[in-house]
Image (cartoon, rainbow, N blue to C red; front, side, top):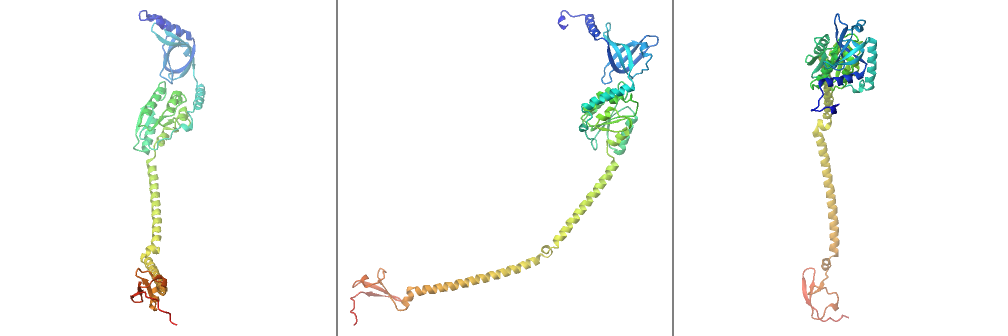
Length: 406
């Protein structure tokens, strides 16, 4: 269709409206489920007007129907209905509405059946898995609270939390907790608190109510928003028997808002008692440790080496004196033995020395060059000689050999 128009050949508004009406009329009748946000029954008119709203999104449609379709049915704003209707595009004003031909209220039994189907879907997707649940902080810096304005649930959570921990801080988001605006306001409040980095835990609280009153807390959009939170979420909806789907998705479930106030912060008195117990235990352990170490030191001090160090020194001194005396004796003995051995060797050397032979009257005949004359053949007549005696030496000369005596 866009190719059939141009800036030079545009369609008139009526043509566009007619085209839209043609496309809407092709849809035919459809079954639609929603929540009645507004119901108008004007006296004396045959037509009733409704505003049908999607509980999971901020989307609504106008519905017109015959008055006789609503007279047999007890309906009120906030009720859920299923209608069979044909989309109708009002050409003159360019508005879209539904023209209903049948209206059926959704009963409690059917609501519970639908919740059970949604529960199975969310469980299959892992939104109820215990492994994905985050632990609550021990002492949150800031608690985000989503609840009704000036409600008993808000009072129960705040008072019980402050009674346990007076310094606790809250960021409170007041929203509608039932009716047509509940789900979008709840989802938006949860997202705002999750985006605040100072908020350490989010509490969604509401007092008790009927199944219809608690339906917003089983809405798929809210369950998915809570599942996507990075901040731990605590569900405190209704009383003990009440169990919306939010309880299964949240990281922690509290049976009542009062229980939530006790769950999100520690008890200062209880913590002080625990601290006192730990302090006493620590002191006891330290005292035991000191006693053990004292006994160990006393045992070490009682040893002779520490009790009387001089006695050990004296004992070692006598040992040293004994070893010194022994060493001296050994050295003296070795010196005496060495002296005797040296004297013996000196005697042997002296006995074998030529000087000793000279002492006995022998002489050594030498040539002038120091050569010892051992036979007659070593000299000739007239050779000068030197005769070495025991004491001194004399000069001599070789002469003819004397005649042998007969």
